[in-house]
Length: 240
Ligand code: SF4
Figure 1: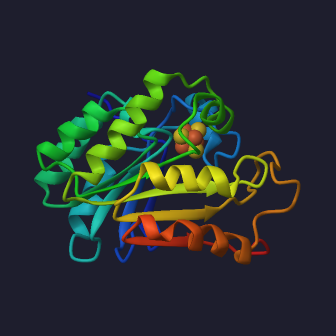
Figure 2: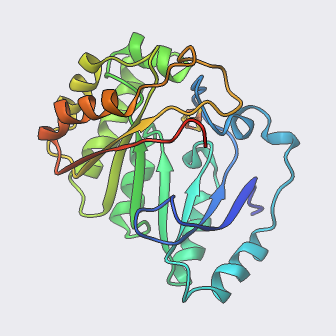
Protein backbone atom coordinates (compact mmCIF):
# COMPACT_ATOMS: atom_id res chain seq x y z
CA UNK A 1 0.00 0.00 0.00
CA UNK A 2 1.36 3.43 -0.90
CA UNK A 3 1.56 5.83 1.99
CA UNK A 4 0.77 9.48 1.33
CA UNK A 5 2.98 11.67 3.49
CA UNK A 6 2.91 15.39 2.80
CA UNK A 7 5.33 16.76 5.33
CA UNK A 8 8.23 15.65 7.49
CA UNK A 9 10.19 17.34 10.23
CA UNK A 10 13.28 15.23 10.84
CA UNK A 11 13.89 16.37 14.40
CA UNK A 12 11.49 18.24 16.63
CA UNK A 13 11.87 19.34 20.23
CA UNK A 14 8.32 20.64 20.67
CA UNK A 15 5.87 18.04 19.32
CA UNK A 16 6.18 15.52 22.16
CA UNK A 17 6.83 16.86 25.64
CA UNK A 18 10.34 16.10 26.89
CA UNK A 19 11.09 13.98 23.84
CA UNK A 20 12.99 14.40 20.62
CA UNK A 21 10.68 13.27 17.86
CA UNK A 22 10.46 13.00 14.12
CA UNK A 23 7.13 14.26 12.77
CA UNK A 24 5.19 13.16 9.69
CA UNK A 25 2.18 15.03 8.32
CA UNK A 26 -0.65 13.07 6.69
CA UNK A 27 -3.15 14.69 4.30
CA UNK A 28 -6.82 15.50 4.69
CA UNK A 29 -9.15 16.16 7.58
CA UNK A 30 -12.84 15.73 8.36
CA UNK A 31 -12.89 19.15 10.00
CA UNK A 32 -12.12 22.60 8.67
CA UNK A 33 -11.18 24.67 11.67
CA UNK A 34 -10.95 28.31 10.59
CA UNK A 35 -7.79 28.72 12.68
CA UNK A 36 -6.05 25.57 11.34
CA UNK A 37 -2.29 26.05 11.08
CA UNK A 38 -1.99 23.19 8.59
CA UNK A 39 -4.80 24.22 6.26
CA UNK A 40 -2.79 23.28 3.16
CA UNK A 41 -2.81 19.69 4.36
CA UNK A 42 -6.58 19.95 4.73
CA UNK A 43 -7.56 21.83 1.60
CA UNK A 44 -4.70 21.61 -0.88
CA UNK A 45 -2.93 18.37 -0.10
CA UNK A 46 -3.40 17.00 -3.61
CA UNK A 47 -0.95 19.51 -5.00
CA UNK A 48 1.69 18.72 -2.38
CA UNK A 49 4.20 16.10 -3.40
CA UNK A 50 4.43 12.88 -1.41
CA UNK A 51 7.51 12.21 0.67
CA UNK A 52 9.02 8.77 0.35
CA UNK A 53 8.18 6.60 3.36
CA UNK A 54 11.21 4.33 2.93
CA UNK A 55 13.47 7.36 3.20
CA UNK A 56 11.80 8.36 6.47
CA UNK A 57 12.07 4.82 7.82
CA UNK A 58 15.77 4.70 6.97
CA UNK A 59 16.30 7.96 8.81
CA UNK A 60 14.44 6.63 11.86
CA UNK A 61 16.44 3.41 11.82
CA UNK A 62 19.75 5.29 11.51
CA UNK A 63 18.87 7.70 14.33
CA UNK A 64 17.16 5.44 16.83
CA UNK A 65 19.64 6.37 19.53
CA UNK A 66 18.82 10.03 19.13
CA UNK A 67 15.09 10.10 18.31
CA UNK A 68 12.66 9.05 21.03
CA UNK A 69 9.67 8.54 18.78
CA UNK A 70 7.61 9.33 15.70
CA UNK A 71 4.73 11.83 15.88
CA UNK A 72 2.02 11.25 13.28
CA UNK A 73 -0.04 14.37 12.71
CA UNK A 74 -1.99 16.03 9.94
CA UNK A 75 -4.64 16.82 8.97
CA UNK A 76 -6.45 14.09 10.80
CA UNK A 77 -4.28 10.94 10.71
CA UNK A 78 -7.17 8.55 11.32
CA UNK A 79 -8.76 9.29 7.95
CA UNK A 80 -5.73 7.74 6.20
CA UNK A 81 -6.41 4.08 5.50
CA UNK A 82 -2.70 3.22 5.73
CA UNK A 83 -2.28 4.58 9.27
CA UNK A 84 -2.47 1.20 10.96
CA UNK A 85 0.11 -0.39 8.66
CA UNK A 86 2.39 2.59 9.04
CA UNK A 87 2.24 2.40 12.84
CA UNK A 88 2.88 -1.36 12.81
CA UNK A 89 6.02 -0.80 10.75
CA UNK A 90 7.29 1.82 13.16
CA UNK A 91 6.54 -0.29 16.22
CA UNK A 92 8.37 -3.23 14.62
CA UNK A 93 11.42 -0.97 14.62
CA UNK A 94 10.92 -0.51 18.39
CA UNK A 95 10.22 3.17 17.92
CA UNK A 96 7.53 4.85 20.03
CA UNK A 97 4.54 6.45 18.30
CA UNK A 98 2.41 9.46 19.17
CA UNK A 99 -0.72 10.36 17.20
CA UNK A 100 -2.41 13.77 17.08
CA UNK A 101 -6.17 13.55 16.53
CA UNK A 102 -9.42 15.46 16.69
CA UNK A 103 -11.02 12.47 18.40
CA UNK A 104 -13.69 11.59 15.85
CA UNK A 105 -12.57 7.97 15.43
CA UNK A 106 -12.93 6.34 18.87
CA UNK A 107 -12.97 2.73 17.59
CA UNK A 108 -9.70 3.15 15.71
CA UNK A 109 -8.16 4.88 18.70
CA UNK A 110 -9.28 2.09 21.03
CA UNK A 111 -7.86 -0.56 18.71
CA UNK A 112 -4.45 1.09 18.74
CA UNK A 113 -4.46 1.39 22.53
CA UNK A 114 -5.77 -2.12 23.17
CA UNK A 115 -3.08 -3.57 20.92
CA UNK A 116 -0.26 -1.49 22.39
CA UNK A 117 0.36 0.18 19.05
CA UNK A 118 0.61 3.74 20.33
CA UNK A 119 2.47 5.29 23.22
CA UNK A 120 0.95 8.75 23.34
CA UNK A 121 -1.95 10.80 21.98
CA UNK A 122 -2.63 14.52 21.76
CA UNK A 123 -6.35 15.09 21.26
CA UNK A 124 -7.91 18.39 20.30
CA UNK A 125 -10.99 19.52 22.16
CA UNK A 126 -12.31 22.32 20.02
CA UNK A 127 -14.79 23.88 22.44
CA UNK A 128 -17.75 23.11 24.71
CA UNK A 129 -19.57 19.91 23.77
CA UNK A 130 -22.61 21.50 22.16
CA UNK A 131 -23.37 20.99 18.45
CA UNK A 132 -23.76 24.66 17.53
CA UNK A 133 -20.65 25.76 19.42
CA UNK A 134 -18.52 22.84 18.21
CA UNK A 135 -19.65 23.31 14.59
CA UNK A 136 -18.76 26.99 14.61
CA UNK A 137 -15.34 26.22 16.05
CA UNK A 138 -14.34 23.33 13.77
CA UNK A 139 -15.91 24.62 10.56
CA UNK A 140 -18.11 21.60 9.73
CA UNK A 141 -21.56 20.56 10.97
CA UNK A 142 -21.20 18.56 14.18
CA UNK A 143 -24.23 16.57 15.27
CA UNK A 144 -24.84 14.65 18.50
CA UNK A 145 -23.36 11.48 16.99
CA UNK A 146 -20.07 13.15 16.11
CA UNK A 147 -19.93 14.84 19.49
CA UNK A 148 -20.59 11.43 21.05
CA UNK A 149 -17.61 10.01 19.16
CA UNK A 150 -15.36 12.82 20.37
CA UNK A 151 -16.49 12.29 23.95
CA UNK A 152 -15.97 8.52 23.57
CA UNK A 153 -12.38 9.12 22.46
CA UNK A 154 -11.85 11.38 25.46
CA UNK A 155 -13.22 8.74 27.85
CA UNK A 156 -11.07 6.04 26.22
CA UNK A 157 -7.96 8.12 26.83
CA UNK A 158 -8.94 9.00 30.40
CA UNK A 159 -9.49 5.30 31.11
CA UNK A 160 -6.21 4.25 29.52
CA UNK A 161 -2.72 4.10 30.91
CA UNK A 162 -1.00 5.68 27.91
CA UNK A 163 0.51 9.13 27.86
CA UNK A 164 -2.04 11.66 26.60
CA UNK A 165 -3.02 15.28 26.62
CA UNK A 166 -6.14 17.18 25.67
CA UNK A 167 -5.62 20.59 24.16
CA UNK A 168 -7.72 23.55 23.14
CA UNK A 169 -6.52 26.38 20.96
CA UNK A 170 -7.99 29.56 22.43
CA UNK A 171 -9.31 32.09 19.94
CA UNK A 172 -10.86 35.25 21.32
CA UNK A 173 -13.80 35.22 18.92
CA UNK A 174 -14.62 31.54 19.56
CA UNK A 175 -13.85 30.81 23.20
CA UNK A 176 -15.19 32.04 26.51
CA UNK A 177 -14.15 31.15 30.02
CA UNK A 178 -17.64 29.71 30.57
CA UNK A 179 -17.23 27.27 27.68
CA UNK A 180 -13.76 26.21 28.79
CA UNK A 181 -15.20 25.48 32.23
CA UNK A 182 -17.79 23.24 30.54
CA UNK A 183 -14.99 21.41 28.72
CA UNK A 184 -13.12 20.95 31.99
CA UNK A 185 -16.14 19.47 33.72
CA UNK A 186 -16.56 16.91 30.91
CA UNK A 187 -12.88 15.94 31.11
CA UNK A 188 -12.82 15.88 34.89
CA UNK A 189 -9.99 13.68 36.19
CA UNK A 190 -7.93 13.74 32.99
CA UNK A 191 -4.15 13.67 33.26
CA UNK A 192 -3.37 16.77 31.30
CA UNK A 193 -5.14 19.71 29.67
CA UNK A 194 -3.26 22.28 27.63
CA UNK A 195 -4.62 25.69 26.66
CA UNK A 196 -2.79 26.90 23.58
CA UNK A 197 -2.64 30.44 22.33
CA UNK A 198 -3.97 30.88 18.81
CA UNK A 199 -1.27 32.06 16.46
CA UNK A 200 -2.07 33.78 13.23
CA UNK A 201 0.17 32.20 10.62
CA UNK A 202 -1.23 32.79 7.17
CA UNK A 203 -4.79 32.08 8.29
CA UNK A 204 -7.76 34.39 8.76
CA UNK A 205 -7.31 36.73 11.66
CA UNK A 206 -10.04 35.50 13.97
CA UNK A 207 -9.05 37.42 17.00
CA UNK A 208 -9.08 40.84 15.38
CA UNK A 209 -5.39 41.15 16.06
CA UNK A 210 -6.04 40.58 19.75
CA UNK A 211 -4.91 37.13 20.83
CA UNK A 212 -5.54 36.20 24.44
CA UNK A 213 -2.76 37.65 26.57
CA UNK A 214 -0.64 35.55 28.89
CA UNK A 215 -2.58 36.97 31.85
CA UNK A 216 -5.92 36.06 30.30
CA UNK A 217 -4.74 32.55 29.51
CA UNK A 218 -3.42 32.12 33.02
CA UNK A 219 -6.87 33.08 34.30
CA UNK A 220 -8.45 30.37 32.11
CA UNK A 221 -5.90 27.89 33.45
CA UNK A 222 -6.42 28.86 37.07
CA UNK A 223 -10.20 28.53 36.73
CA UNK A 224 -10.07 24.95 35.38
CA UNK A 225 -6.87 23.44 36.77
CA UNK A 226 -8.76 21.81 39.67
CA UNK A 227 -10.27 19.33 37.17
CA UNK A 228 -6.92 17.94 35.96
CA UNK A 229 -3.75 16.39 37.29
CA UNK A 230 -1.87 18.90 35.18
CA UNK A 231 -3.17 21.99 33.40
CA UNK A 232 -0.92 24.40 31.57
CA UNK A 233 -0.80 27.07 28.88
CA UNK A 234 1.26 27.16 25.72
CA UNK A 235 1.85 30.78 25.03
CA UNK A 236 3.66 32.05 21.97
CA UNK A 237 5.25 35.41 21.65
CA UNK A 238 3.23 37.04 18.91
CA UNK A 239 6.27 38.85 17.60
CA UNK A 240 8.42 35.76 17.12
S1 SF4 B 1 -8.91 19.17 13.13
FE1 SF4 B 1 -6.78 19.87 13.13
S2 SF4 B 1 -6.01 19.46 11.06
FE2 SF4 B 1 -8.24 19.34 10.98
S3 SF4 B 1 -8.87 21.39 10.32
FE3 SF4 B 1 -8.93 21.34 12.57
S4 SF4 B 1 -6.93 22.10 13.24
FE4 SF4 B 1 -6.75 21.56 11.06
